[in-house]
Length: 166
Image (cartoon, rainbow, N blue to C red; front, side, top):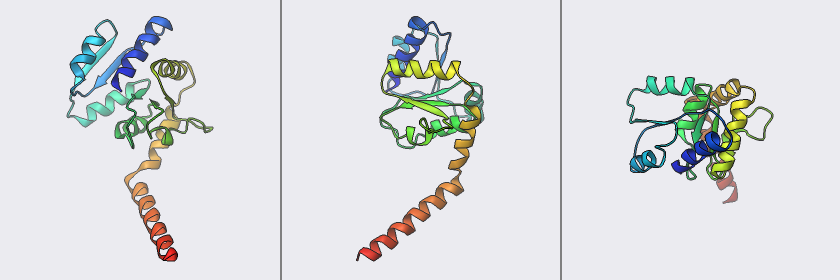
């Protein structure tokens, strides 16, 4: 829900007194509504960006990245953010939290279920120690080679289990 990001920004800036700016990369059917709902807030909309190096540059200078969608499974943009060393706050209903390690000793982000909790987690990351090193280390766990090897191992293991069950 992209509205979560806008609502969290409003809570951060108006209720919590945090100086923050939101940059929304990309576009879609909700763009105009998001723009009108956030006209009174420090939000910039880039629209579609074809230059992947520019997107990587934006991620690398950001303090954190948001993944507010509740239906995300792998969320490539969250992984791209982590690879730039940028922590992520994601919707707790999505699968993104599975690779953020929020409850581990070395988290690289956090999850939240509503706009207020998003604001609280964002503020904690902004005020806390840097999670950049942990974010980058986590992203390195998801190279194409490692991901394919894990997938092949899972496939081969499940084939053996099915064969044994038969």
